[in-house]
Length: 310
View 1 (cartoon, one colour):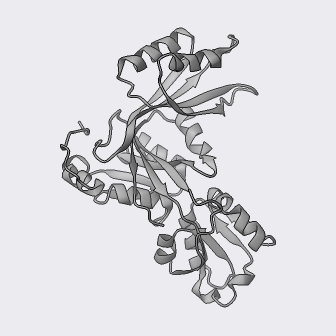
View 2: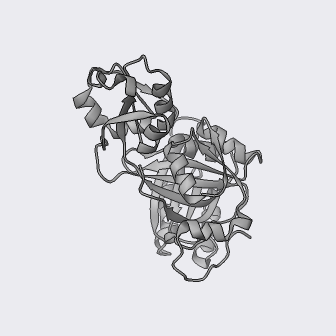
View 3: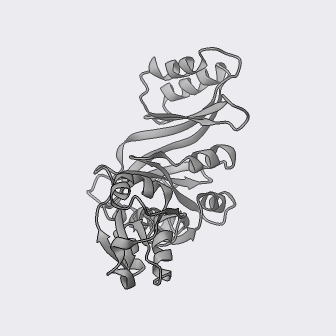
């Protein structure tokens, strides 16, 4: 059983996981390469584990689904750009996994170039990064480099790696300070993201319905549900929301995604601030089933703030 009590001592999150190391000698997949934001969140939370970089989000999810790794860490939502829809859709359509915890990481984006191009960086001919990172810096890039093509990569670290490997090209990457250090790049403009409050939420996924240790988690338990409404009932969404409302169960997120069966067909991802084992949640699940809804629970978990790096 992973979840065990360590008392009320003021342990750091690293100490908590170190004390449960006998239970956490795991292989953990993450969206790489090294120095990506996912890597930073994963390394801060699991400092003593075997970290396995993956090139894409589906590769991370498949690795844990197929038993190649024990856990996977994938980005789910950014405070500025919203949900990572690939993660949502893959968890609904392709994989049967559970969320064992969620990690929150403060995001700071910087413009970085190869040291060979330090004298020419104001004349860059391309900016490389993950689409979410580029979108988070839209205003800066639009006003500073409106004529420069934006090139998408699988992660911010992949962009930094590409710029590092092509010193002859006058190009830049958008990413974190760790990526600049890892790949020997020079930060020429710091904190270029459009808004100060920029955090990303990551899911820690497992094949087992288990939880990370609760010590030093933030806030209360959270349960993520994926709900498909009955197709022949008007007002079905209102009825679903009423299931939670009259029980005074707080929803922190609700989002619709296409079922991929036709226009107008959707499933809903709902985050409920409650443990799925409490009576009110059990009653809510039973009522949803009685309404004809299909409910897929990703489990109950806690939230952890990782280091403010980047």
